[in-house]
Amino acid sequence: MVQIVALMCVFGLGMCFALLGSISVKLMPRLKIDAGKFGTLISTFMFSCLIASLLIGVITDTIGFKWVAVIGFVATGVCIFVLATGKSYNAVMLPCILLGIGAMAMNTAGNVMATKVLFEGQDPAAASNLANVFFGLGLFLTPLIVSFLFRKTSYEAAVSTLGVIIVLPVIVALFAKGYPESNAKLDVVAAAKLLAEPGVLIAAFVLFCYIALESSFCNWLPSFGKEVVLKENPATEAAAADASGQRLLSFFAIAMMAGRFATSMLPAKAGFDLTANGGWVIAGAAVVAGVVIFLMMTCSKGAMANILAILAGFFFAPCFPTTVGVTFSKFSPEVHGSVFGIIFAIGLAGAVIIPKMMGNVAKGASIQKSLKLLLPACALLVILAIILGQIKGVAG
Image (tube, rainbow, N blue to C red; front, side):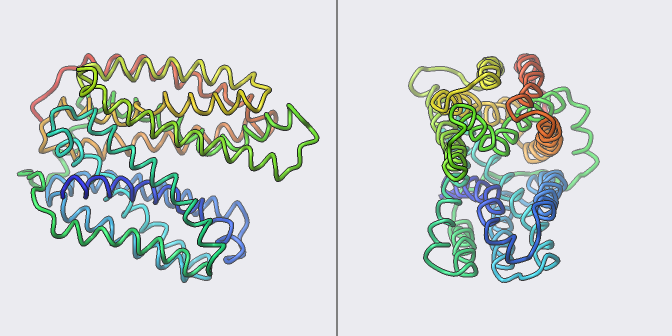
């Protein structure tokens, strides 16, 4: 049962990250706001995630996974129900903050617990890869569910249905047995001292580079696809070009799920110790990602853009969960929540900085030209991943 709770938490995290984008087409006219104000809602959510990640990591080590998971499901459900009924900009600002708290509670509970309860805790990196297949599933299914419901019912009913979906796992979380135990005490000072550990710092910068890459693709891949389609055939109708761009994001998400599932099976099918060799796996994936991005910069065919989006998703796939698994293997289980909170919070900064820089460059050129900003991130990711793999573990 605890395995199901961990997977539902990660699925819920995927729903959180897809939520605002999925309902934007109805939410913006409902609130009478432009793209700028909607962007502020997203920034509020991301900033809330960054702060909440730091705090919830320490709290998880103290009160345990059960109640953090319950907090995550309930807080997110409340947020979604308020979004379903809110009719003003100010009315939805608070739930966006609450969404960050709920998302990070599910994120920490799910990702940390998965490394302990999947594969009997023997290979944290493989366990994290398998769990994050469900993150991709939540990310992929949420816009599909919303799109279907928007055609069948009202905005309020459609969004409230998502709230019901996210609250239902509370029942399982409350009655599940066998949660991993933690004997840690609430000690913010001790958690802060983890920042001095090389393993935490390097892992944090690995995630900074990787999350910058993933978030840039999630934000700009549809625009890139549209550019390529119009370059190949300038007479293409705008609606058709938009649809082609959106399909790239779907290809990317599906390939990422496939890549994470394949990576999680390496230990069982090939006898490969993913945690011990995770640094090299991440570095290799970053090299391929760099090549794919370079090819995207010169791509002029829609079919090639589809292939490159699939390759990017597949090779991006193992970077985040493998980083988590490798990092956990270097620290005592009692501090895993705090470690995760720190590295994820710093990683989120990459999502705040790099996609915005790409947008600034694209204003005077194109999305394809702005992709060059991602190449240094790939290069740094290679170097940092190798260093992470070589760092020795500590007692915690």
